[in-house]
Amino acid sequence: MSEKKREICTIVSQESIGAGIYSMWIQTDKIAADAKPGQFVSLYTNDRSKILPRPISLCEIDRENGRLHLVYRVTGEGTGTDEFSRLKAGDTIPVLGPLGNGFSVEKAEGKNVFLMGGGIGVPPILELAKQMKCEKKQIVAGYRDCHTFLREEFEAAGTLYIATEDGSVGTKGNVMDAIRENGLNADIIYACGPTPMLRAIKNYAEENGIECYISLEERMACGIGACLACVCKSKEKDAHSNVHNKRICKDGPVFLSTEVEI
Image (cartoon, rainbow, N blue to C red):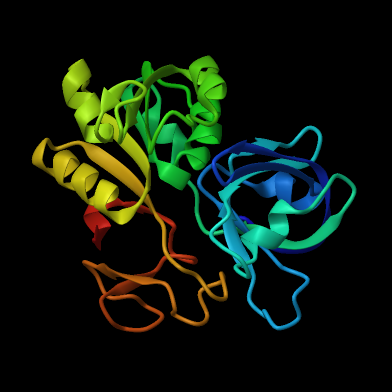
């Protein structure tokens, strides 16, 4: 696991790329050097009444220039993300990272792969797609509507299939509907998104005997595994708490699907 660091990072650029979706590049030499696909960083607000940071997944990692690309959704006033969206190039922000574990990229070598993302779980799939060396790279992205953020970047990284809830782009429905409609298959699956989507993917993978890695989304507090605020049920006992759970921020967010119950 990468060694976490806290830095005062500089905003390189920030723009709106969809309905409430923002794209931010930050300069963070030390964190970017160790970051891996599937990990996240915690951003601190300037609101002194908010002690805890907000976790945001890594969308892209530019090690050469010491930069990270974060794509996030503004979740409401006073949530932290609203403050982040008002930051401009040259502003600074305290960042802790890289946090959590990442995807096992090497396990995909020579295989037919599904890279599946839904909603705000779409961005973490991009760096994974860029780094992955596999036989067949199938990216399946699920959106609410026609605001298919990062579409061009995904098309450059692999073969992209899109599902939208309203049917405005690609398959009408979810990522599993896109798989069925296009007659797709895979030897290994990597997925990130809301729990109902991951539950469906987990069931599909286990029914078909497919190795599957899922990145869980959950409200986090400390981000380092100390507070036990973000836990999920696990098959085995956790050595830290001696109960059947895993700490998503510390043991995850990426898990082998058979390790956890969702």
